[in-house]
Length: 154
Image: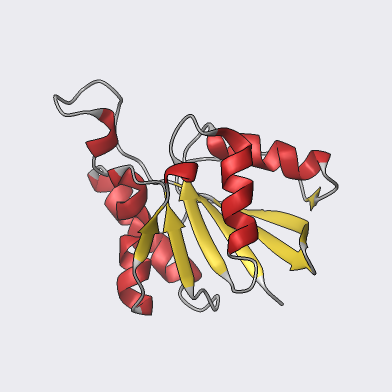
């Protein structure tokens, strides 16, 4: 059964504390540990495709998993901060033929979850999107039928 793993990027410290543009903000030490934890958490999930926001923190979040799986992380603007649910949903539909992981931001993830829920996707529990958390969504034909929340790795 094909799945879609929707990941919120790992910890990248506080916005505005750096001199470079926010798009270049790197993972913090905690975020790097979370990214390694995600690698361990998702290593045996059968993922064959990784797509992330082009923001550095999203690319770095999937980096350890990409290295482990031997696949590239594809950057896609439709997953960038501020892009909303429509683009993220389009990316999800494009990867539905495989088991994939998408990594995005704290505004896009809830927008996408709310859009899925409004469209009939059954999501278990409350909608949450902590940094480095994952929603495991299951495809039923052309639709995402159900989803469950995975807490951030410890």
